[in-house]
Length: 197
Image 1 (cartoon, rainbow, N blue to C red):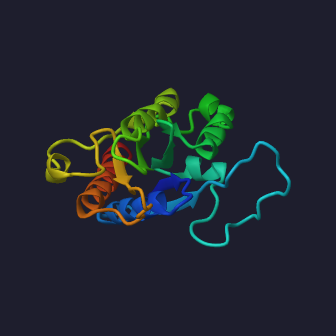
Image 2: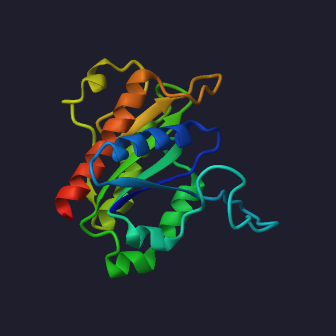
């Protein structure tokens, strides 16, 4: 069964929860399933290597996951209007995959979480899309035919799924954020099924 890679870095749990909702949306498309993977943290000075598997949650990504997937959803918390360092670091290591066209023609989308309403969600999503365009991905967003996009009072944009965690770092997505995350998962899975029957 074709798999859509849902790859993310999550520090406070918000992005991980969005990833699980996206995975649920993927599973709603007949013949498609999600493959959840996460990224390890990075540091300016490495003192000890990361364990081969995280203590909890999805396993760490391997580059073979990119080759084996039929589509990609990439998630990151927002850091000053941009993706977090672990996501950028991973993307920076994909020169061989770029040269060989590993992701060419595969549908892709992005998702994020911020602490505030104006914390840079849209700029983060847009900057995450740029490397995916260089890899030849077919970019998918959330169209305004999704009713929750017009009613959300927190996260959710046409550029990708998002969540506003708030000042108290509430990791659980709102109903609208959940609906939009699932819709994005369905959209990428449906595109993958149509592009690669």
